[in-house]
Amino acid sequence: MKNQMKKMITRLVVLNVVATISFGAWSQTANIQGNLPRVQSQKMEEKSYFDPRDLTSSYVSWGVNPENPSSINLLEAWKKFKKKKEIVVAVVDTGIDPIHPFLEKNIFVENGKVDENNFGVDFSKDKKLKGAPLDQHGHGTHVSGIIKSIYPDVKILALKYYNPNASGLDNLNSTVEALKYAVDNNVDVINYSGGGPEAAVEELRILKEAERKGILVVAAAGNEESNIDDRKKAYFPASYGLKNIITVTAHDEDLRILSSSNYGRSSVDIFAPGYRIKSSLQNGRAGYLTGTSQATAFVTGVAALIKSQFPNLPTEKIKEIIKASAKKEVTMEGKCATGGRLDASAAITLAAQYEDTPNRQLANDSKSQAKKEEGKIIYRLAN
Image (cartoon, rainbow, N blue to C red; front, side, top):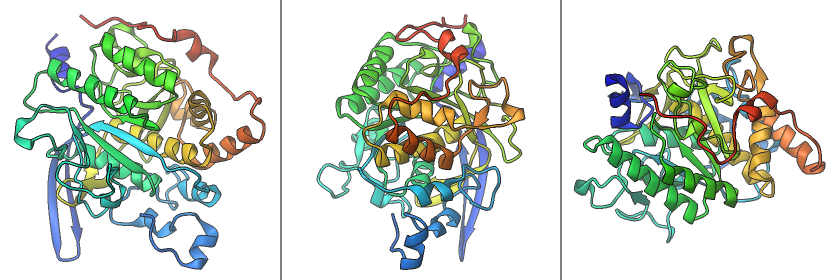
């Protein structure tokens, strides 16, 4: 019961990680609880829509590095990619650093100019910040950086829900408000690298409205070392069982599930990189964080790529494409519905095939669908 209450206090997918990154003459140490398009040369542009040098910059991880066999195969995806639509991703998290050099051109703003109150919304009720979603934690900035590393043209709407001084109930209520704002404003994708063991009727109602509107929600499986197929260990919003929710767990560079990560043959959809992921942090820094939060952001980035190139694809098809294109791994068998990990290149290829023949049937996990009932909470809270 004590562990359950501890989870309810934060509703944030986190692990403790110490990161030290040095760039030239300076270094910064981050002790964090965690889980632009550049000007391209003609030669680069012929090979890839985005500059391949971005994949080895100071702010990105092994998860996108084309030299790493455990990465998501992003460079090959970029070679196939052609942007057709601007994509807005709502990051429901701890806020963002709006002037971070890696992210400042990716902030979604109403009037095209970032100011102290015009780069997102703070629902955390932290009166010290006067309504601005400034990230004092680092988690939201880190997640946003991962998404940008995969889709450099993404626009990020920062929706802050997390207040370290608030109760679990207050943080849950703030989450609901943030999700409602995202859905009301018709964002393309919602990244929610958080959650907890408590379900909420209003949260489910809003996520069902997102499903009706065709908004994809990418959610973390959680970091409790649990099989969330067990109803007593359910993790929300991942366990709501809606067609528009993709649930993500984490693997390391050896393609093994993280010891901390939740899993489930029917409740979890796919693996993505989540161990010692380098990305942006608050105050212009970079550092490493670990957890299903980071894995979730990888899937969000690929979903944004697909949505940008194939804007007419239905949300449920994008989910099916990401799952059907997963790369099977023996180490992941039985741990998620696909038994595999995120493959950006395969996903873009499959999306193109689907657009050419929209009536084709994609591979799907019938066991997963049988275990989930649309629009119904099929799990109960752990006691």
